[in-house]
Image (cartoon, rainbow, N blue to C red; front, side, top):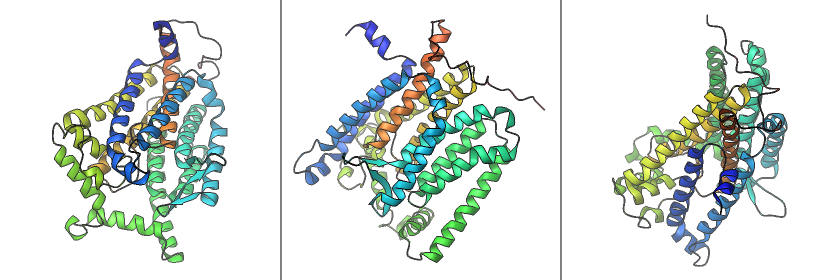
Length: 406
């Protein structure tokens, strides 16, 4: 393998490429360790089932990153609206024809493949790309409440509403990320506070109406129980907090240096140990110093690299795109880690690029590829390398708008 081939294949921010390798390394180790016993009992003694499936998905993910980061950035801009419409249609189809698992309809099976697609993962990326494109297009009209509401908040409300009934935590997370993106995009704070207030009132009203119309609705009961248990005394509800308690035991027994790879005991008692609570298993086996700290630093470095890339962009769309996708990844990682440590109620959010999963791995790989696509062009311009017309994203895009200081 020549050095030139590697340089031409893996372009863009080298630090982010290193982080991708680190995430995949931890993913394979943690997924195998946390799921070997479950795989043995569920798949006829095949302890490597989850490891093999995760390896396959990570390989697909790497291919997606390589392909995506070579695509011209303007493709994301031109297809933003189409991508959003497709994701909304997918959410509607999921509600009608989706597979119901654990009392929630969040997945749709792709005909002829048996592959289950979690439509909310696709929708959140589509929404981020759309917001980046629309913020760039309406930079000079963001002081108009009607324009912001119609072209920015209405799509956010539609996506979150379609996700809300089956996945409250994801809907709230997507709404929060959208508000952060709009804040970065210079939407006035007074507008954002108004939207947050409207969202809270609407959510409370919707929960009340659902509880009245369908008094035995399981999803409302789940929301209510999780919130009540989070704020109640843990001693009064030991069964309700089983997952959190087992995760805390894993973290506490891991200590500074961990029990060593493959030595976890809580993996046998902690539900979703290879996905939602994989962070707790990593700390149990690798400890605070070799488990928690490297992973937390990795996501923080990804955030800082995203900010650095965005600051080097001369036009609005690629800057907003990088910041939006970076925030999406880092915020989801933060939520996952806070849940594992008991600082947030159980939400069901995976640890990006580390937890076992299919749709999540592919979607996050696409997002990282898009970030690298912007960095590839930015760094090529800084080095004065010649770019094709398709690779350039400056022409036809709004320059970054600096509002006049008042």
